[in-house]
Amino acid sequence: MAEVGEVRGEAAAAGPDTGAPGRGGAVSGNGRRLLVLLACVLVLACVAGAAVWRASDRAHAKDRVQPGGPTVASGAVSLTAGGPQRIVFRSMAWGPHRDELATVPAGDPDGPRTASGVKCLRFYAAGGTGICLQAVHGPVSDSYRAVVLDAGLHVTRKVDLAGIPTRARVSPSGRMVAWTVFVGGDSYAGTDFSTRTSILDTRTGALEPTLEDYTVTRDGSRLRAADLNFWGVTFADDRHFYATVATGGHTYLIRGDTATKAAVTVHGNVECPSLSPDGTRIAYKKRVPGLPADAPWRLYVLDLATGREHATAETRDVDDQAVWSDDHTLVYALPGDYGSDLYSVPADGTGAPRLLTRSALAPAYLP
Image (cartoon, rainbow, N blue to C red):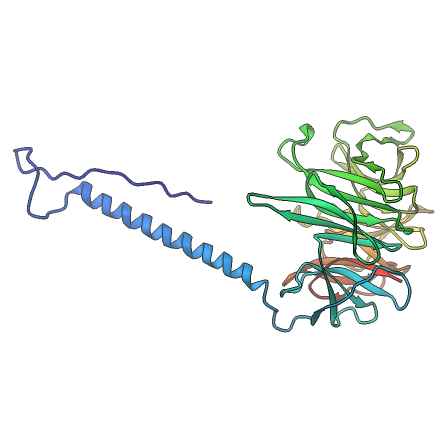
């Protein structure tokens, strides 16, 4: 943000050889410089005003329905299981329902959507429980919170967050919820962001504020590094989960146990894991050597029994925690004209990616 300071100056035109103030309306060199400076200040003020106006206009534009965008209408959205499969997600479509949780039939993923009125930055749901990571707008800056939702989207618990939301997951039964945020201020991180991952038992109310208290072992030895970072939980059941741990510039898939507060590394170079419904495979983003530093990830799948991995047919940079729509298909977000769009690709490495849902983010598939 540029700042324009005040310009101050004095102008005096001296008569020849006398030192007396000049007369007759002639402008001295100092006077001309002052006028130029004042003109520059006026130009800068106009430019700044125009920039503010354009930014305000863009912000208001997001409240207007986009031409050719999806049809969105208010209505009831439920997380209850039963009936045809549905998708619930954060709707990014411009208009009065932007950022609200919305739903569509899984069989018509880009069809008319029903908006709930509940706004989330990140979302996930399973077993009749939803986790919604929200921004709380303040007069000076925003803060963030995690909101646990029941099947009717009623709030059952609120937890203040230490940073900016990035990932959220729910165990298949709906009992356990987890989230990851970006935080600043960790001494080992320097000026960079680090992550903090929490797990909440919605039945007992017990909250684990950070997984950094877990004992992590790799090849039989305990990892004791001060820079351990955790993110991207995916639940196997109400006790066991997978996640990413990072240390020393490397990332690992870990399998964790909420009862023993322990975890063990399973595979290297894994970020944002997602467990398949049948529990046999992990989808994840892998940092591939040779790719650009600003787009290093590809979507991979790991077979947990054999330890073998393969790339999917998606060759674009996937910076997301994918979800499984079924045992054979992955769904993930890529940047779109109005924020992000959802795509799908077969998990076995065959086929080709296809656009699934425009202007959408953070989907959950409900049976």
